[in-house]
Length: 220
Ligand code: ADE
Image (tube, rainbow, N blue to C red; front, side, top):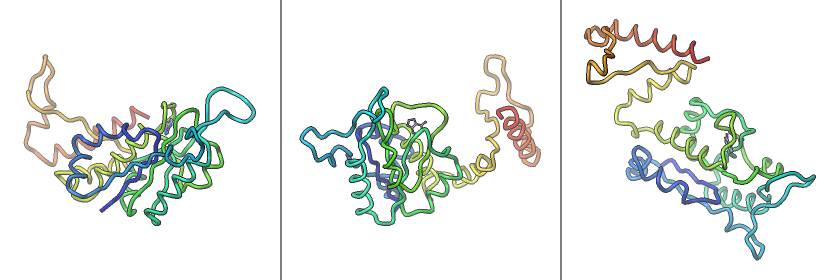
């Protein structure tokens, strides 16, 4: 079974999304196990302090190294083979190819921080730093959730139709999905492309590929 360990100050953040749809079914089917680890449990001072102000001054608070590194150590102790990923806007961009790469590991540990970020020295204790994109979230949790969701749906036997995951390989090559249509055939005066109603699967395939390429060019 693939495992995910989530290091966070807000374990409850993940409750609702993981109890819906594909992730919840994958968990119920025993394909993936998800465990949260509360970073605050590793703070040793009286007030369980996990953040502090930056040396050199400036706004905001940083995640302190001691509790974060202790929580990473606990995660590595539970799963010595784990791959630890820090979610940070300064990391490398998370991609579909990366999601696929993670499915080949026994499991992953996703480290989310709050406040203005992490003390830089924490980076020495993780295997990789990933960003969801060029914008700043209020914390790593939404990013960790996206990474986990993207990985779960690629695990063997999670998707109803194995074809769905194969088709994702187009996004991996940098080509987006083609446009999709379902009933009704006419919606508020807008029709469905004729070729999709033709029953000619070779032509449909060609059209979809061409549309996907066109779309990918337009979005660059
Ligand atoms: N934490 C805050 N913003 C983030 C982002 N864009 N990606 C990953 N982690 C983050």
